[in-house]
Length: 273
Image (cartoon, rainbow, N blue to C red; front, side):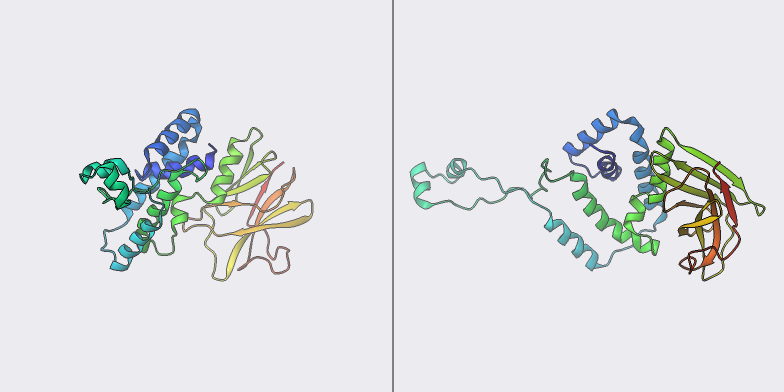
């Protein structure tokens, strides 16, 4: 099992939505890879945050109808049939049963979702589709927050984790005159670099922060980002970092510099050498 599949199972485990087979697979994978336990904590924290942050609401009837429509789309186990036992139940002998043809078998219980086969992928994904249906109701209270944002770590967070686990991980920190603290993280083996900021000033409407690799005298655009209300951000730099680059941040028009060069002096500069 790879780490991505385990992360899917961790979500299902946090929602108490795994089948017995998937729960065993989850426990075995966790026992063999204890360093993956951060996925478990993140999933549990997210589930707790959702339950504590949302006021109970009565969902509209259309949501209930949509949920049951989603459930009905899941693969179902075929109803079990046994000709000889059915004939015995109806008091028929084998000869009469054969002459009468196959009689329909009345179901004695509701059909259950089929267990996953090795080719169908982890059952957690099917359960996650149901969980997403429930979460869609909860998201009504989160405005623009999406289900994927709630359950999937942002790409920048994933990249930072990969860098920190790499044997050649490096970092450098700089504190700006306005109190902003910025730390650059990078790893040549992963080919990734991330800037983590704390206390970035709020921007005027129509502007954004833009990242740059400054290589000698040449600035190379590396993407834009928006800090949260506290000025905190974790942003992946787009492109390849070279040893000795300065990682800089400038204030640019919304969407980034129109001509591919900085239009202001850097508000953040972190030397990596």
